[in-house]
Every structure is written in structure tokens, then in C-alpha cells.
Image (cartoon, rainbow, N blue to C red; front, side, top):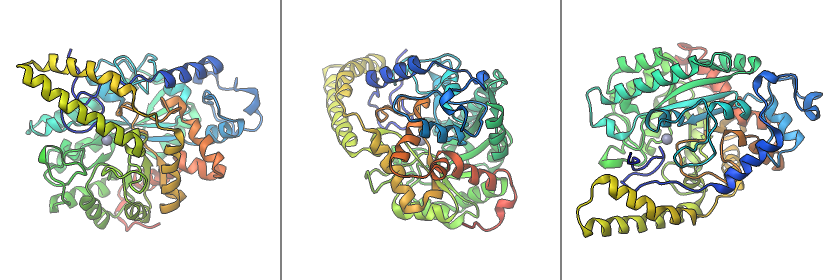
Length: 460
Ligand SMILES: [Zn+2]
């Protein structure tokens, strides 16, 4: 089967094949961590490592410890409600026959991934927001293409959670997430990515809410009829909200559904912030001051999101956080565009053959891209905490939606390294727990658990 161009959800726009990146270093580190610490299932609560058993705040389950993470950092991590606000594994379930129930090697190629049930269990994650991402192509199939597509995600995610009542629990509130922590289960929530999913219908929005979706990213890389995107693929809208777009935001406020400003244009961001009466989130966006990419948020936007009481959840994608990687990746893209043009000049090729040829050419080039140090990711967290306040930053990994991750952040089981990195920078245990999920929990409590009350003016 020809792989779709642009497999990674965050992958850019045009038809360059985003082929596999060999992640041998990361995979080796993961294998090492697992070999060293085993893979304690959640059911083994009470058989925790002796080094933390006496002092940790007695969670039901402790995460497997990645290499290089200290007792102190693990204690902080184990005591946190850890919430990741963006994960694209469902797209791999739908399109790549990815089996979420079995362990995969960490990586970006066929048969590899950043997330699956065994690794979620040992990750120590309390809650994972699974993305129901509607690709831009579905927007051209209106009526019904985009909404039908998002419905397939809801079906697939609910069915998956339903198969594992002992290990997963579907959640729509902060209270349910806290309950999952106490029960030693991983809470699964749904965020819809791409406002074209509702096909310009508030009724469709309400249906998504009724089926459990609790945030919606107003655009993807494509703008829609009522909101502009930061990228504007295929010449789609990049401006602000239309009057109907403001109605969408107000209806989300009324329902108790988080408004997600990741992917939107600066103009749409400004309109959302002027319209919303509830805290807004960026589910997977990093800091533009550190890497000039339109998908990242500016310092002014960080402050404005913080002023609503919301949270900017940092995206881990190397292209979004690391200028060195971005420049090398841009150069690689230019090379691939030339190769594509060359191949096309030689004669007519069917898409599958063309993509296969390009993938073959791309693979060795991708292997030469620089590896982003973990410190770069920590810089983004640190920056947003300093600009917006430590109460307004979180994590939105974008696992399984990207094609490159920082060294040591190869999959969901690597998250304790964030606790370690922040501890190394002098963050207090309390602040680290806020960043790992406490801040999102606060927003979820305010917006999701008190649906309807969100119509009151937002406050800090
Ligand atoms: Zn995205």
C-alpha cells in the first residue's frame, strides 16, 4: 500500500513523502530503560520500588523509571496528575492498521510508534487526550466527508477504551481524571482537531460534545469557512473569525468544551481571545520566540492565553522547537522537491511508484538531520512559564503525529525526563506537578466539570 504523503499529522503541506526517520538511538534508550526496570503492570500496585515506597504519596501505580531519572524526580512524577493534551495514535489506528493493544518499538516508521496500551500503562500518564484529526482533504468532500470522518474516530476511540475497562477509562471531566489516578487506570479523553469537522453546523458541534469530545482545535493546517489557520494549506483561510466563528466559540463556552487555539492564525487567535468567556488552551503549541514557526505562539499570545486562565501545552516536535532542525528539514524538503521534479520529467509515474522512489531517496537524507537535545524542549516549557506564569504551561506531546522528537523523548514512557529536567532547572516539586498536568486539571475543572458555569466572565 502506498504510504500517504505527509504521514505525520504535523507534517507540512505539500506532497513530499514524510518517510521514516531511523530512531535507533531513541529506540535503544527505550529498550535499555525497559530492560533495566522491567515493565510493571498497573496491577502490581504495592510492589513499588523500595526506593520510593516509603515517601511517595502512595499512588496506585508508579511509572517505569527511564534511565537518568533520579529518585526525587520519580517521586514528583509519581505524585502528579500527568496530562498530555495531544496524541495522534488514533490516526494510525484508522489508517495504518496500528494495533494499540500491543507494544511497538519507538519510532516513526511502519510498525513503530510513540504510544500503545502497554507503554501507556508503564508511562505513569494519568490522562491522554486522543486526537480525532480530520485531514484537510475531507473538507473538500462536504457535505458529510469531514463529519463522517470525525465520527469514525469517536467510534474507534470508544471501542478501544471499551475493550479495556480494567486499564483504561473514558473521561470527560477533571473529577474522572483524578478518579482514574486513584484507580490506577489511564484516562482517555477526546479532542477534535480541525473545525471543518463540524461542517459549519452547531448541531454537529453539539453531537461531538454529546459523544464525549471535550476540546476542539478550531482549525488544522487548513482554514475553514469561519476560522483562519496559521498555515492556510491549499489557499485556505488565514484571517480571523467570522460572526459564525464567534458563535462556535460561544457555543463551546456554553457547552463546556475547551476552545483550542493550536493551529489557528494570529488573527483568529486574537478574535477567540476577544470572544471567549472561558479559559482557552493551546493543546500542542510551542514558543515562537525560540523558534520562528507560525504554528508556535508569540509571547503576547502566551500572556493573553494566560489572562483567560488557560494553558499553553508545549508541542515536542523537533521542527517546532528547534531552529537547527527546522533549517535542516527545510533544506531537505527543497532537495526532495527537486528530486520529485526530476522524476516527473523522466516520464509519467503512478503515485505509488513516485512515492516509493521518493521515500527511498529521502530515508538516508532524513537520517542526517540533527537530533534535537532534550534541553531544547525544556527551554520552551521554561520560556512559557516565565512569560505567561508557571500556572499556564503544560505538555501536549503530539506523539504519533510527528516525524522527529528530542533525544530521550522517544515515547510516552519517557515523560519522567521532563520532571528531571525541570528539577535540574530549580523548579519546585509543586511547580513541576502543575506543568505535568495540574494546570490542565485546573482548567478542565473550571470548563468541563462546571459546564454552563463557563458562561460567566473568565477570571485569573
Ligand atoms: Zn496538530
